[in-house]
Image 1 (tube, rainbow, N blue to C red):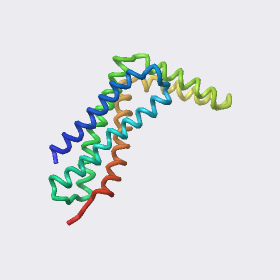
Image 2 (cartoon, rainbow, N blue to C red):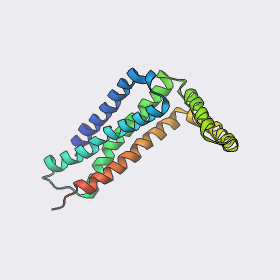
Image 3 (tube, rainbow, N blue to C red):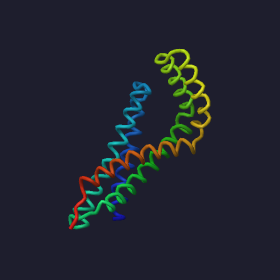
Image 4 (cartoon, rainbow, N blue to C red):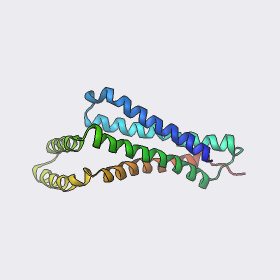
Length: 169
C-alpha cells in the first residue's frame, strides 16, 4: 500500500508541478478568471491519480478486493501529498516568483465587484475584502487555504472512487 501511495501521489505531485511550470508560458494571455478555471482543472486532473492508485492497489496488490475504508485511506494519503505540494507551489509563487500577486488579485477583485454590484453592496464587499487583505498576504494562511482546497476536492474524489472501486470478498 505504501508503494502505491508514494507512486501515485508522486505522479499527482509531478503533474501539479509540470502544469504549474507550463502555465508560465501562457501567464500573460490568461486573466484571473481563466487562470482560476485552469487551476481547478489542473487540481482535478492531478487528483485523477487517486482513482488510478486505488484501482492499481485493488487489482495488482490486493487480488481484486478492497474495502471502502481502505479506498478512503489510500485516496486520502495520495490526496495529502498532492495538497501539500499545491500549498507549497502557491507559497513559492506568491512569495518568490510574484510577490505582487495579492495586490494584483485584490485590484482585479475590486474592479470585478465594481462592475457587478450596486453601490451599497459594493462598499460593504470592499470593506470585507480590505479586512481580509492582511490575512491573504500571510504565507502560512495561503498554504493552509490552498492545501485544504485540494484536500477537499481529493476527499470527494476518494469518496466517489470508493463507491466505484470497492469490492468485497
